[in-house]
Image 1 (cartoon, rainbow, N blue to C red):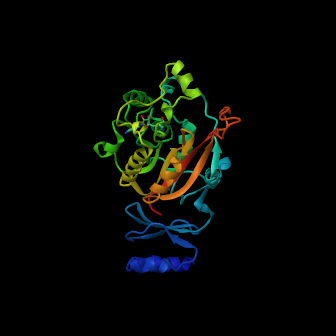
Image 2: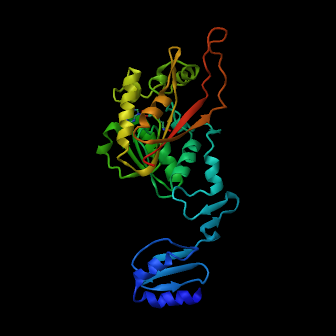
Image 3: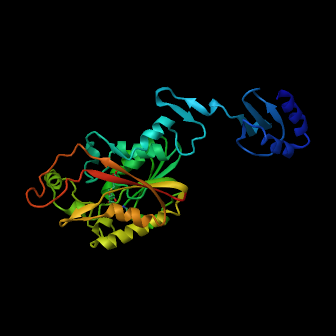
Length: 332
Ligand SMILES: C[S@@+](CC[C@H](N)C(=O)[O-])C[C@H]1O[C@@H](n2cnc3c(N)ncnc32)[C@H](O)[C@@H]1O
């Protein structure tokens, strides 16, 4: 083998393209990056062969071996070819379970005003799976900016939009990421570059406006029980079908901003209103499936919510203690 390499080294000086072709025939070697060949250097007899030009590595030929994994101890082994995230195989598999339970800590005073803020642990779970450090993440209906906050903590670049000034002001203070005030339907007016991953959650139609035990308690404490009365807020679209239609158009238009093969996660629920279920999560999955590839739904099981006696001895009413996280991909 050594003789062969020396032979190719000599040959290379004259016929470098010939070498590329020949190397492809070496069993157990893989070309990692192709570029102009100037000089072949045998760096390590067993492992790696590099092509360099003025100290810059142009091509690496590496023997397929266990070296493609980095041992991260308890975390497991990280594959250097991982295209999607910075997780080990062990962490990757753990994420793929179709349901999960979270026990988020009580919300801090500063963000309690918002009626439906998501826990940081939920956003962290998804961002760490669907991005690498340095990737750009968008939440176009950002509330108090949890996505930006998590991005800052974990070395991603956050882009957020929120319609309501009061939540925007809170969100702005929580991180130094990009935060825009306005209607997300006008996303083209904001200076947002191509995005690697979108994670977001719409208002669940008008469900906050309905009186529930939780809403009554919030009212007593002087906290918000709806986002706003502004026409532009999706929660104020009166008819379910119109609401769904507008939401689908909006998410469909996000496609042009999301990089090819990038993922979109929508955290959403079906809505129980006037004794019937409006299948918002299912409708979005089905309608957006025409524009994105629907990959999965993960179910966030909220086992820390108390059971309330609803319809007892009369008719079925569910204690709805779960939320859907719909996972789409922009192309196969
Ligand atoms: C479910 S909450 C998002 C919560 C957020 N993910 C968090 O963790 O804080 C939905 C948000 O969408 C915002 N929203 C509704 N219509 C909007 C619009 N047209 N443009 C931008 N934001 C909008 C609401 O004001 C609300 O804060």
